[in-house]
Length: 114
Image 1 (spheres, rainbow, N blue to C red):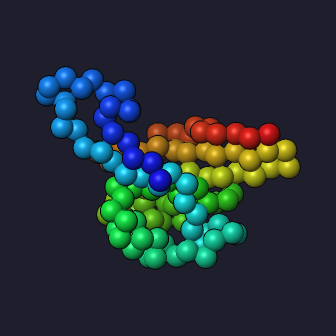
Image 2: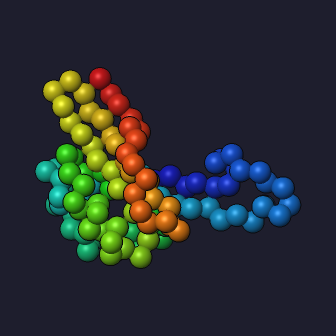
């Protein structure tokens, strides 16, 4: 889990911006849509609520259906991503959405390991 604050995100901390909130996200979560996880979307939403997270990044293996379904139902921010496995490497891709603009903005490679 990562706590993102205005200061460590590089925001200007002048007097009018000093009270920006800290956002708590888990940036690598799998669901039962991934071959290595049994966690249902309903149970995952309950865990996110219990832990007081503002959002999560769902990165199932070779699959985005679980992330898309949860994004459509969740009362918290869901970053849709995918952990793509190949014979040569593992790659994590994510399409980022703004809380104000729920439309996808494309896919970016976030991490790659040979």
